Length: 308
Length: 304
Image (cartoon, rainbow over all chains, first blue to last red; front, side, top):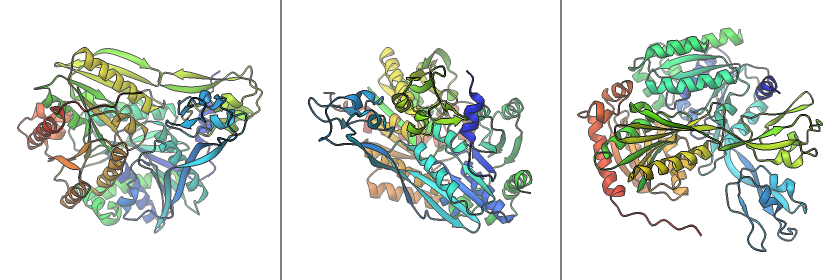
């Protein structure tokens, strides 16, 4: 039974009716956050209220690019089993149910957690004595802060924890619940194509895929475009550091193959580094600069398509 | 045999470029196996004109599968799933494979025994050969998950290749971030190189990465790539490293030869051996030889 339509409908289902535009790319360090932050700032300058979701919970940097500090922390936890030794009959059912082999039963002892628990609660479900309670293991935090018309939602994975996807999901839930009159959402994803990137892309109306014109950028972009096609999301390509040497023809070919368009090229500009270091988006710091007008053009494209 | 992994908190700071050049330099005196554990965006092989020898599908992930001839639509599975990976399409439960962890909670609660947990192919491991070395590349299948377990498989395959060609060194190009693939890549190595660049964002991500490396008590050092990009950020990283007692192994300046070499799909030390960046990479290789590679084998605790 092919359930692809049902799966994608469920994946992209969302409880909000304002537009969501995601910025991703595949390769790291190509300028995803720079683009996301500047699109948000440019839309704010046009008079819109924007919610920006920094879903790169491994390395959240949007607040640094915006020059704001992370505020209003909320802890993200996942379940960890708390076994009551008085109720436990040593039946081993929990140990056998754990597919990650995280529980160990010492001879005649109560099972102990020795491995990486992902909080699936299979052990709790299978225990016939109700001897296992839900403990809470902190895996990260979500934050919310405001900057003149821009609400930034950031998530942060706790160093040492592996639960990036849980933090992204908690962040999305917080964002959905606190939109407070925002006109649209911009999502900044982590690099890569794995599950927390997919979690960040859920429910997007369209996607900008940022890359650089190097063989590495081309290779990683192609993997991202394949993922987006699989998720039935349309992508526009942004070539950042467009003056770097590389196989430019392959980007044209990819744009053709995947039905998107090469949206815009942004050449290397000292101003982008300066704005990064200053913590002011370049569209605010130097609105007349060439890179600012290029970024603004993308923001205007978004406004035309979704907001006017 | 020694294993060195290169990771970074922030992406795009030059892990693959550094790995390719570092390994190339060390090949002058060692037999090296390269491993690419950035399974989302495996780029290391692009630096070598490598010929693929084998490609193997890897089943390092599990998913739930519903037998709809048995399902009565009771939704117990959707309620049990902690990963929001069973959604209802009308009355029908549907597994969302992108986030399903294969934990089996749904199968436990299903009163009809209609749910099975099965392995799925989530990656490929390619072994390629180029100029006297072997490159083991892990590649996540598009839309699949369990990157950490795939990284474990890449490391296993690299060790097997190292044994086969009697290599004495594995250089692993790791993933960015601090999550499960990074933790999988870092564990069990002899030494971790944390790559960064002098920007406030990269410095912030470096601090988070070092916390992970310390959490697992791994010996490590920092490499500052594009070191001349921003003076104040570079100084801040040096100060932080000093305060925490972490060695800064090398500062690699940014010159035009780096992107030129990347465009030409070569390590910069091969394409432009006289470039300032190549000189800094040689310093790095020399330093690692003294500090890690030529040191006696680390005493590994035996299992059990």
